[in-house]
Image (tube, rainbow, N blue to C red):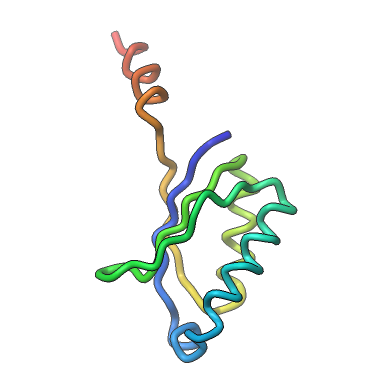
Length: 96
């Protein structure tokens, strides 16, 4: 399965309801896992982004889970496909 890192910011609606954020996380994780996405972790951050989400799954399953999350209006996200060290070794070994 592919690994994805989502960089997340709260919207105005999301920050107004910040006290519910931990419960929204639990709901997102349950929904994502039903769709075949393994949520490895959600980290609240300080700086440019408010949260980082690490998950594994197919492109389609992860995209659907994040679209559903975004459609609720509490967050906006930027998602990065990430590669482990072993995956990157395999990729670069194929370079000629």
